[in-house]
Length: 225
Image 1: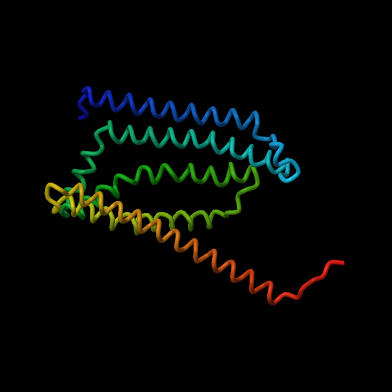
Image 2 (image 1 turned 180 degrees about the vertical axis):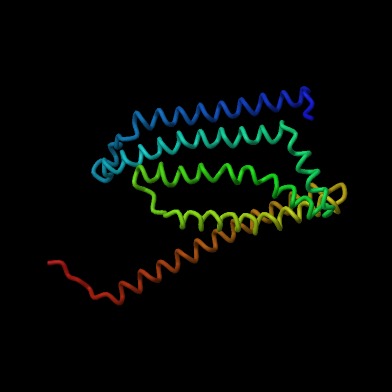
């Protein structure tokens, strides 16, 4: 049972204030786009297509409005998980199997992620097949969407589970300085992720450049008369 105290009320106050500020900023951005989104700046006159700009602005407005609803829904789910007493119930459910700290922690966080996983499905479907399709930006079929969704879920589990297991192991065996080792581990993980992202991007850029040069060498030169 959740105990009502000053700390809880302080958290709720900051949480609701942050949510209200985020919604206000999003609404201001939407209002600005509605008023000025279809106007081409003078410096870009003649280089930007007016029709495409209006199409992109309309899509951005719809996407931003839907993003507000998505954000509020996720934040509402977070409050329900924190205040409903479901966290101790999930912990008790995970402890029934007596799996140990690391494995039991993984099961706990896996069960905890299920509500957000199921909540994300209708929002993702609506965003792809209603909003993007309305403005002509959707190129996915339902089978492609399912494949992409499953791949993202697999990659999240593949990358997140080992990191979470290491963090739980450090909490269990790291002693009084477990937080320092955990901070170093998370920092190293982020550094490796950025290095991998940069390396893949550089490889694709070099590969694309070589492909363009090869095409230019093999294609005959066309003289313009």
